[in-house]
Length: 366
Image (cartoon, rainbow, N blue to C red; front, side, top):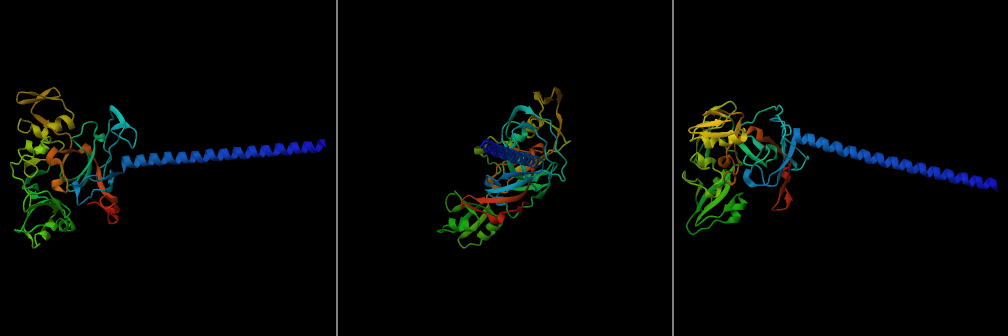
């Protein structure tokens, strides 16, 4: 009997030991599995952070200012390698807008394989915003003029170095459309043609559309005349009064006298007549302290009327020219505000039809 009890005891101990070993093994496997997943998550987060900081960043088109080149609801990949990525400018929590206020890091732009070219579509930090450059709102527009170009706007047409801007087929603008007496223009017919009817008085319609659509519309039997809407040179847009760039040049966003886009190394003579043009450059973008001494300027303690520009600048405009607040309203974009070049549409969502625009997937951006 004693031997049988001893055998039973040993068997129970063996089973208990085997159960403890299996439990320990399962615990070890669970810890190993959790550690592997944690390592994978950390690796993925670090990889995503590096890719976002140095190579590609996702961006969504929230407004129609670039239509119909880019549509509201397009999701883009923005390349930072084209012009060179910026090293971090602030210290904060990745993938959020949380950062340490008052702390700005020394930074530099890494080498890129090209410089900004006329006609490139850029994502940049909105110059009008306050705060660190990298924390400003992201905007997207086309670089219609680059550093050193001479720009002029006459009757809404942008001239670069004396030549009219090369207009893309996707550009849109407002047209005035006059219908024949006792006839009306069908809004549904206009929408079917790819245009948008805007509020307008009488038998004259204001329509936002591409040039190709305007040419087609001019052949409709009910149409008497189709002409681009051009504001008079003396027009003053009180609704946009806070933005005084064009007004400071005694123009408006359809008329602008010749101006040289500032470039690095350019020495300008400051005066009362041009101070509005260079004020933001000297004080905000290039961080100088400026006071006035009669007709001269005191820049960082030195009395002078000469100033040398420290970086390149760009003149940006939306492709939907009459639906875009851009450099015509708030001035130049500094080079250090450039985030990257719009590269590819990876997804597009039509918010009105609640459907994806499959044909736009993986389209290169020109």
